[in-house]
Image (cartoon, rainbow, N blue to C red; front, side):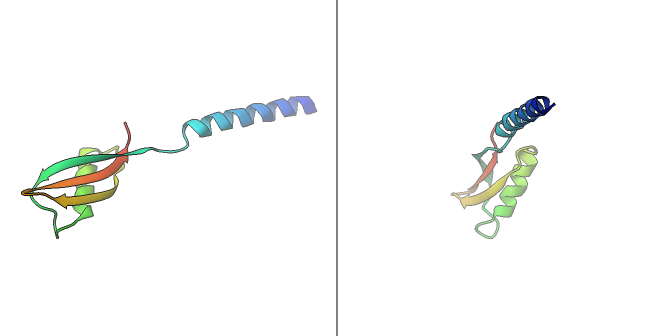
Length: 82
């Protein structure tokens, strides 16, 4: 009876370790998009976040930045790596 319980616990622990290691952390990668116009208010994360959410709905964008160039803006966000 005790040996059977030990085997069940061992298998349960092994399965838990296997699945938690494989699905533990989401990896984010930087992605940039160049858009027409300048960043609203000079520097706006919100407009970039909205644009990335629209373009990459399953990407879960975060940590966005907006940088002005001559007549364009460059939005950079972290999204889930594909």
